[in-house]
Amino acid sequence: MSELYAVIGDPIGHSLSPAMHQFWYKNNHMACHYHAFKVSADDLADAVKGLKAIGIKGFNVTIPHKINIMPLLDHIDEEAKMLGAVNTVVNRGGELYGYNTDGLGFLLSLEKEVPEILKQNPKVLIIGAGGAARAVGLTLAKHAELKQLDISNRTIDKAKRLSSECEPLTKTRALSLEEAKGRLPDYDLIINGTSLGMAPHTDQTPIAIMPSERRQVFVDLIYRPLKTAWLRQAEAEGHTVLNGLPMLIYQGALAFNHWFGFMPDTKGMQMFLERKLED
Ligand SMILES: NC(=O)c1ccc[n+]([C@@H]2O[C@H](COP(=O)([O-])OP(=O)(O)OC[C@H]3O[C@@H](n4cnc5c(N)ncnc54)[C@H](OP(=O)(O)O)[C@@H]3O)[C@@H](O)[C@H]2O)c1
Image (cartoon, rainbow, N blue to C red):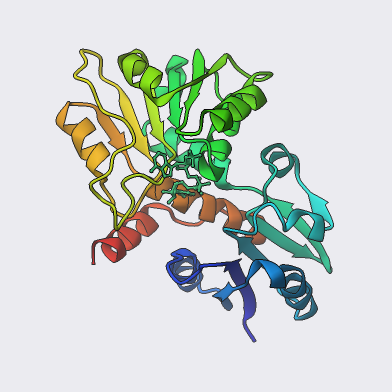
């Protein structure tokens, strides 16, 4: 009998997690199955009870349940507590342990794909202050040595809130999008944490890219499309660019590691998912 793993969310139809985990199970000859379950906010508590009752070994949690799942779990680790959100659950002997691999997945994607950037104590700008920007911002503030971490968002109050949460950990400011635009050439690393540019609105960009003498690193958390209009502009200006696919893969690999105790192959996964997303 194969062991069951899952992701719960709503909507869930476009999730790449089943394809990703099934690929790793197959390549590692594991008798496991990973299924996506659509669970509405109203049904969350019942769904978690049901998953526990059927003896699920672990599951991922996605929008809109990453916060509301927390009181339904028996233990929450420090990283998930800091982020105030859980994306990975492990069932150990009937007790549910909550983790968050989103922020550390992002950090690992930077360390692996743009290895020099964090070594130079960068000045960082994050555009966006939603769930993804929050995970990335707080994780960078906690784990990286930054010269500066600025947050800019359409709704400035949300940028201020995130910046004040980062304040005990790093030097930070909240900026309006207009202020951020003017200061863009000052940053070493610029991260789009908004949904601007995501399919089907692929012509949108989060902030104008000014010509600059400095070589900068532009990261878009979006992976649909693989290269957003914004990343194409940055690349045309000669900057280094990275999409959101490595973050997605590393958060999945870290969840896999919580369940099985080893890191799966991420390079093969990159090729597999790129092919899938190009189709
Ligand atoms: N690579 C990965 O593994 C990964 C993981 C998670 C998310 N993501 C991507 O990250 C992006 C954000 O996801 P999320 O979960 O953080 O979403 P979210 O919580 O809904 O946040 C959305 C963000 O986008 C901004 N935004 C939306 N529409 C805008 C507009 N028209 N003009 C200006 N700003 C706008 C919002 O600003 P306001 O606060 O002003 O509304 C907010 O900052 C999505 O594209 C998602 O695919 C990637």
